[in-house]
Amino acid sequence: MVKLSGRLEKIYAMIEPGERVADVGTDHALLPIALYARGRSHSPILSDARPGPLEKARANIARLLPGAVFDLRLGDGLAPYARGEADVVVIAGMGGRLIADILSADAEKSRSFGRFVLQPRNASDKLRLRLGELGFAVTDEALAEEGGRICEIIRASPVPPAKGAAVAAPLALRRAETLLAAGGAAAEISPLLFGKAEPLLAPWLERKLRTADAVSERLLAAGAGKEALLEKSRARAALLRDLLDILRP
Ligand SMILES: C[S@@+](CC[C@H](N)C(=O)[O-])C[C@H]1O[C@@H](n2cnc3c(N)ncnc32)[C@H](O)[C@@H]1O
Image 1 (tube, helix red, strand yellow):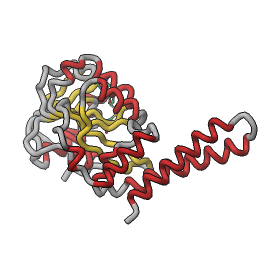
Image 2 (image 1 turned 90 degrees about the vertical axis):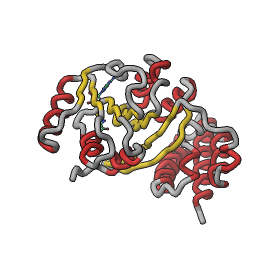
Image 3 (image 1 turned 135 degrees about the vertical axis):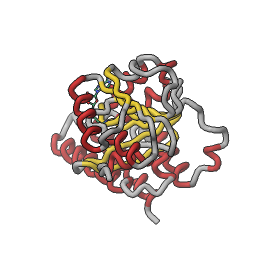
């Protein structure tokens, strides 16, 4: 049995049985190895921009799945793939700006794939904004903990969501949407997380709140000249408290 980290398990869960998966920046190849070993995806395609990680992938496949033949490709982003070649493309463990650049390199080609599962290590707000610019809809979000950090996982599709979806959305989602839009944080925190029982959402927001409170305290201690920044930081803390209130029973 191939063991995945909590982060990779959450990414795995966003892939439907039988889908053809492309894993861009595969490195250790543990995700496609698990997809194959557990029978969820029979012919994954793996790629990496550098030969070293691709060799690591090859070695792990030989060790964990002796005899299995995987399609491994060397190349930048989506360049090693034909248009629409995979049902779902995973791009995980890279910076949000790099993922955004990979998607933007050939926007039309990016839109030819059915779905993306993206796990930015940082700058997720920049990535969400770029997804919107490129005509992608975020259809699901999840949080996962790894190495003491809470990571964001974004599922996005070029198909726009059906009209009327917002009306049917749970109350918590709609309240979060309103607060996040008013607070200018809709690209940073996805309202979709409020519409599902995401167990890491409260601890993640609490971490952000602790940081905002610490920033406010430092600005207060710094004294004159910091009033505007202090106001901004306090407004952010107030927004985070309001969002946490939504989660209280
Ligand atoms: C930290 S590893 C992530 C491995 C795995 N995807 C995961 O989430 O655990 C990042 C990998 O992305 C690869 N990479 C970086 N830029 C890339 C690009 N533009 N196209 C394809 N792969 C890239 C690196 O070589 C490295 O192997």
